[in-house]
Image (cartoon, rainbow, N blue to C red):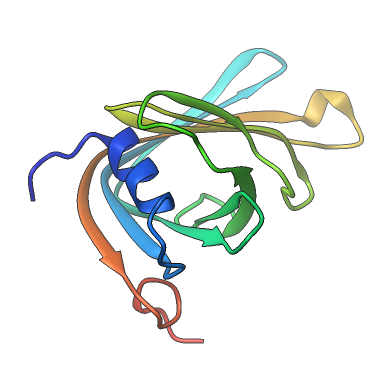
Length: 148
């Protein structure tokens, strides 16, 4: 598969008339965690997936993160207007996640969010950087071939 610009693939799919989910598999995912401004750890994964889906008649889309370190989660974001760099707010993040941002450019998709905790010293800032699309898969079955 040719190396498609991520921002173009992202925006092009979300502006199609179809509401079919798209599973995007990235060659690499780099997850970096910080706590209290100090580096905590970094993990690299291969063949990591997200699912994009447009929410009909709302001006919003939903992304499901399938290969997170702890749990699968989804969030909503407003539809980007053009195929360029995007810096969007994550909406409807599940607890304990908050302060989420989604940044997309030609070379990478970056998710950044905080794992909140009652004790501020236990809060963790997470950055997930996805690079190099290696597979695009539209589907109507459960997420990326998973069974329910």
